[in-house]
Image 1 (cartoon, helix red, strand yellow):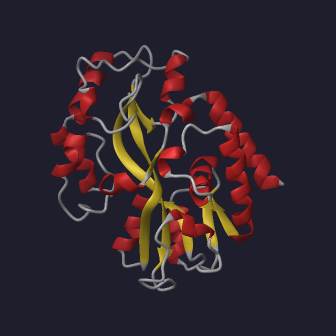
Image 2 (cartoon, one colour):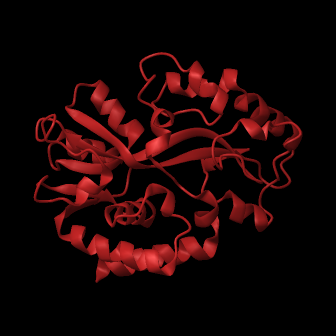
Amino acid sequence: MVAGSSFYPDDLGSQGYLEPIDYSIVNKDDFMGKFAGKYHVGTDVYSTVLAYRTDVFKEGEAPTSLTDFWDVEKFPGRRSIQDDVMDNVTWALLASGYDRNQIYPLTDEKIEQAFKKLDELKPHITVWWKGGAQPAQLLTDKEVVMASAWNGRVQVVKDEGVLLKIVWNGATMQGDSWMIPKGAPNKELAMLFVAWQSLPENNYRIASYISYGPTNKKAVSKVTGKYKGSLPTDFADIQVHTDFEWWSTDKNYTRMKRLWQDWKLK
């Protein structure tokens, strides 16, 4: 059994690398969105958010949505985004005027528009981050004033006293999943573990250790402690829910990665 991103299991499964989930054991009805697929069961929810320094942008004069990332006149300063296509295309479409529920499926017209919008932002990106800890460190060291970042990484440095704030409006919701390799020797035991971990009384517990939310809808209300109210699941209705099925198709992902690299180099 392995845990990993929710973006690729459908494609891996169709190629014969994963066991299908036994939904006579796992209760599929309790999961949010597409966190329960043919070959994967979601274990946690995280988001790619906009984070900014509150000592640079004061309350009432600060960014309130992902589209503000493009407003370099109202919100000047150095910026950082992930060196990856997925979230950036989503954000560019939001900044182009698309509603969060209109992002998927990505069409050729939308993709072309997204890269045109990214052209506007490109001159203002000073760092293209690759590792999850990097944007939090860049913000902590005041090397940038705002950045795209994984919410859990931002929360860690916020808890340490760094003057940061998370913008959830337009963030992209994603997650990690359990998957079982094809031919696993303890497949039945692994399936039972997935079913046990998916129960509401177990699924919520990850939020006691990191600001990632549960995937089971009935687990959300069970969250207590310091991260209650600051989880991706608390802001699910104002975020873009990443379409795992669209991205897990190899031809889509491979094409988008190629377009991203070509765009960066031009």
